[in-house]
Image (cartoon, rainbow, N blue to C red; front, side, top):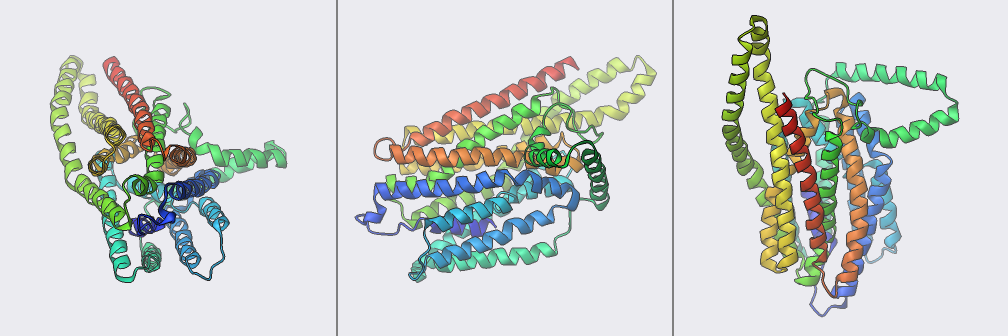
Length: 481
């Protein structure tokens, strides 16, 4: 999927033209950025009404249907783009808007991340879950590396980006067949139990409210229920999950994540138009940039992230052991308390360690995001673009850390709904950023085009602040214990 999407991104702005070509002028590039931003925004707006419902259904019917729903519409979209590129085609920009609407309603491209995260969360324990998600990102980074290089190579041979589009669609079709043989991660007994429970709740609701009101309520619940899951008391208690130190801790964490995603998606929306406008990059240079991004991500998740995990656990382990030993010595005074402590202390210590690992890496990665944006805003050179690309690859460790931390507080039968709530937040912030960043670049393209990166840096600092608030909350809870 990452291979095909990266090939598509590399071919979306074909700016391999002479520098005096009017189609490569600042107004045209800015207009292209604005149109692209509108299409993306329309996709996320329409996806807002369905993404929560679709991901919640995965708790009842499994994760695999989400894979099909994100792959098949993507194939249709790429074939549509190939057809629109034909000289005989009379299709206008309106078709792109219609396609964006369809893609959003089907959840194409939006469902992939929550589907993969839910799949990994079903199959892995809390300790080291972020590393498992990181290994999934390794495969995505390989696609991000190979896709642009393959696209540029094919364009050099054929001078036609449609070849890359066909290969991209073929890759997605192969993934559809591959998914048919992929085992379902959610246990069948968990799915059947949730189906029975939801049927009982629906029958009770239907008997207590008129049909029209019940339909309206059902529609609102479909959209907002995944996000409302993070309100106090909505997450069901379970012995296999962590307990939040504050009723609003997860809401604050989700808010910080949303702000960081707002900045990141906004930057991604205008990246190619910005580099084409400021540095006159062509498709080949864009391919090199994305190849560097994919290669850096590969190294980060395969080598650097596991090493950082090991170093952090080594440093943190001595502190945990010392605290556990002190608690055990106090409990030795009472023989009954001693037996309880022997049974619970190791698991509690391990749970605390996994929480601190994920939380600290979320804050650390978020801070690196801010650094990468400020570098481009303050030093708008090509070298700073490539340096920021490497820093952003390292900063991406905040994403699996966030997912691992969040799912550690949610039982398995609510994981799909929780990640659906995250996806709803994603669609909201991506809609806003797609509109806003394209508009800002169109207004500042002739004066200060790097202003969009300054905005991303400021927003990311707010996300870091939210992470620090959560960190203080956990620290106070530890001291009380």
